[in-house]
Image (tube, rainbow, N blue to C red; front, side, top):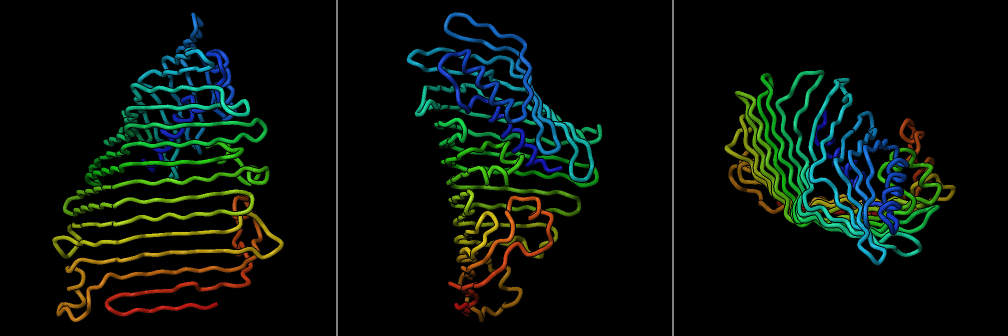
Amino acid sequence: MNFARLAGAATGATLCLLPFSALALTPQEAWDRWKEQAEATGMSIAVGAEDASGDGLTVSNVAFSQDLDGATLAGTIAELRFADAGGGTVTVSVSEQIPMTLNGVDEDGVAYDAAMTLRAPGFTYTVTDGPSDGTDASYDVPEMTLVLDSISEDGEPLDFTLTASLTEISGTYVASGDDLPEVESATSAAQLSFDISGSDPDEGTFDFTMTMADIASASTAVGMSMFNMMDDPETLIESGMSAQTQGSAGTIEMNVSVQDSPETFDLQVTMGGGEGSASVGADRIEYDVAYNDLAFTASGSEIPFPQVTGMLGQSQTQISIPTGSTDEVEPLAFLMALRDLSLGEEIWSMFDPSGALPRDPATLVIDLAGQARVLTNLFSTDFEESDEMPAEFEQVDINELRLSVAGAELTGEGS
């Protein structure tokens, strides 16, 4: 099964369960609205008890379950506390630990059962009345950690551990509108980390660690949520749904170690950071992502050197295409760039031991633009199931074609 998908699905669904949604001005109204919005995403909720006293409301033993693409996430929040802070402000606090289970069948037909715990001590959430009868909210979490307690496949326990954490999380959330709600949000975190390890008598052991520093993101969405986007994206796009997001990250470090006696493999990767933006709407899809200053070191029993090293100055991908079918031709754009790629001397020595060729960094840039008539909506089932070309191209322009390696350079342009 895909363990990274397991962690992502569990964390994403739980974040949706937490009250990052439109709340009203009193604790009871806040709780009622939260239940309505959670159930609107397909989540089932059962409540043990509600206790209204003074200026607050305490909700106990909140059991929830959510279907997630063939799996079921379920859990219980021991206590939710809604407090009237005055001035039309409601504060919300949540139990520090939320036990959860994730059950399903993977792509190979193997049934899996996982138990995990989400910890978020010190979680604070404050909401006030926002513009246009909406919501203006902020939240802070010193640390949020997801720990895999146990996992089994077809009833057999697996030796597998997973810990994912975010530190110094803060964010803002502004929601407005009823028929086509608009949400603006911004989030930052000091660090994201993953620590995964496992072993199998037949396949050996593996360890994976990753850290990502200085994470920041901002987005605006109209008429969508995490779950309704997955249900029927074509209908949502046609009804006016749109979204724009941008984000960045600082230094990234990753380590992979596989010990499958007698074979071994080790990989260390560092990256200076990255940034990107994406948008989707009724007219176009735009995507622009770049990663900077990547370096790697690999070694293992199947590598004929003590180690292999390399560096890449930048990897960039840009895409701009129409979303749906068009009667008239529409502009298209595509850019792929690998800039300043250099490999260690251990690779060069294989085919140029005398050092006759320059060791200059290599660069590949493919920058295309064109005009095409799109024949089907990219989010429709027709597009997913069809073997036909999704567009009729009328023109393709080569803005830049460049390949430089070992002192030689190939360039081109044209239509």
